[in-house]
Amino acid sequence: MNKVASALRGRLLPALAALACLALVPACATGTDAVATGGGTFEFVSPGGQTEIFYDPPSARGTIGDLSGPELMSDEDKKVSVNDFPGQVVVINIWGQWCGPCRAEAPALEQVYEQTKDLGVAFLGINVRDNHRDKARDFVTDNNIGYPSIYDPPMRTLLALGGIPTSVVPTTVVLDRDHRVAAVFLRALIAEDLMPVVQRIAAEGAS
Image (cartoon, rainbow, N blue to C red):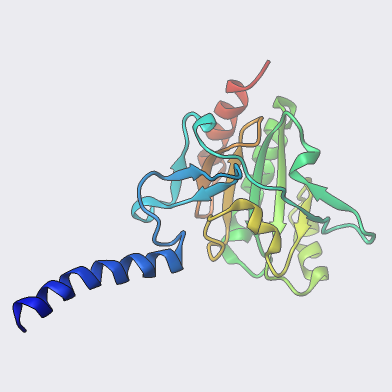
């Protein structure tokens, strides 16, 4: 390869890599863990494949978009939304009844919900990839889950969460009282993982 060809190749490869990265955003995103985009929505980037990401303070990051959808257990056109919980910490859990880790963590999530709801903490599930609504409802009933879930087989509501990897189920996102992303867990949880995080975030915004 002559010097001219070598120089062109040296310039072309980085350019192609940059274009590939743009096509794969946010998978190729670099820099800080998350940014507030021009519209104020949240864009998630997992640095180094981490499964636990914390944002301190959440005010340095963006807020999520309008997250709402049909309520799983309702037979009518009732909707549930993050906006139904103004001024509350909101724990969002993405789950499916087909998901083994979701079944494993369900009692822990319910435990944390019951023990923190008097602190101004709300939980909201998002049921994904479940084309059988009855099976998803049975999951809720069998696990005595007391908080609502959005029924969203095609995962459309997750667009409000920006770049959080939607292929990871379960995922748990903790929002502060202003509904800014404070923590993201890309794995199944036990109560001892989640409880101190929720308690800390609830205490930080308590009046």
